[in-house]
Image (cartoon, rainbow, N blue to C red; front, side):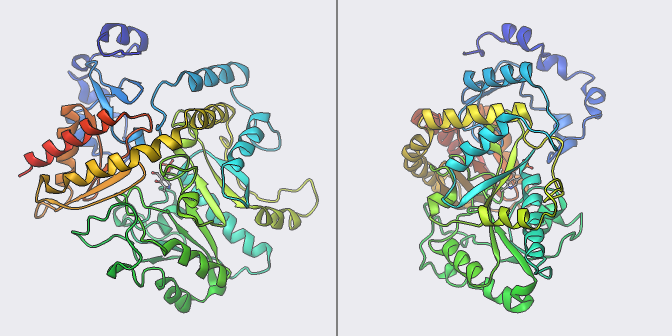
Amino acid sequence: MDLSDRPETLRAAFAVPTSAELRPGGADWMAAHWMPFTGNRQFKADPRWVVAADGAYLIDADGRRVFDGLSGLWCTGLGHGRREIVQAVQRQVATLDYAPAFQFGHPLSFELANRIVERMPAGLNRVFFTGSGSEAADTALKIARAYWRARGQASKTRFIGRVKGYHGVNFGGISVGGIVGNRKLFGQAVEADHLPHTQPPAGSFYRGQPPADAPYAQTLAEQLLDLIALHDASTIAAVIVEPFSGSAGVVVPPVGYLQRLRDICTQHDILLIFDEVITGFGRCGAWTAAEAFGVVPDVLNFAKQVTNGVQPLGGVVVRQDIYDTFMAAGGPEYALELPHGYTYSAHPVACAAGLAALHLLQHDEALARVRALAPVFEAKVHALRGASPHVTDIRNYGLAAGLTLAPVPGEPLKRPFEVAMRMWAKGFYVRYGGDTVQLAPPFISTEAQIDDLCDALGQTLRELT
Ligand SMILES: Cc1ncc(COP(=O)(O)O)c(C=O)c1O
């Protein structure tokens, strides 16, 4: 459905005002909404409206089609407005719009858990649903602590995260997270230490996974041993990492790194949690990054792409023996084994969206498509290296890429912001974060769309002063 040439129809269908109508007097009208992770003052002075979406495009209030270069927020790989998901949601909301999440059940959540488990690495087969990736992070941390307590090792409470890691915005997640800007206003809530980040030095321009013998890579995973020596394994519940860091600007670990973390965690009786909120369900060209990298964690978090972003849903998948430990320690059968959960855990409408999205991911052969597009994307993205001397590094994996831009003196965040604004004006949405510009095009992208995205970015980078 191409809506761009029918802005009037679009406005009537969605009852949206035009950008002209949205702006005058807009300051007052916009004042009440405190927007998340947004420069509110800048946005309210110069708003960028998204009023509809169709396939690989967002549509703005002027009916302009803007290529969705980050798949929403890394979550709409199948494209927008997929009929099968829309219909599943419509059917579900008309049948069962809500069911109490505690002590009563609806069948869709059981069905979805089974469909998710089929796509997990062998051994990860019990699913706890949350409403978001942040809730998944805190749920996984709580499960890890409670698991050791149930096993009589209550001193294992500390967590090890990683510098540049992102695990959402709740207190557990920011404590193990390592993006300083997200932490410094809020203090350290949960006891955590951090592994060093795995970002290669500026100027590396590695394609895909950096090699194991890269000089900077040598001691990265070994430093977990230093943290264990410092804190003692008897105080450490879990290590949590993103298989590759998305929000830090697509930071891909060197070959062998995740395997080494796995081995060290196993040797020291520490749980390994993979936060696959970005990497899960297709972005790596596999169901999980665990599968893509060949390393199986004890606990795996997901969200975002599981419903194609259509409904909020996240979750935590654990090994059966972890679940069984809770059951065995649970007391009488009518008692709760894990006093934890959310009103919207496994919301029926979100589960319907999830089932439809997983079906589409499978039947569209979306993962194969990501694998086929990834080399094309890699070549185009790395060709941007020469576009501007300000591009100091480019990293990529699957259908994700991050470019690091040299800071403007005194204004370290400005250049990526400028790039994103210029790209928006040209008809392309990309994300800016820290000193990076991030790309994650939809799995349904054509090669021509990838070309256009990268060409527009190249032109924008050349415009930078
Ligand atoms: C790895 C990772 N974990 C957790 C989150 C938080 O997810 P949410 O924004 O759904 O709370 C994100 C969001 O980008 C993420 O990338």
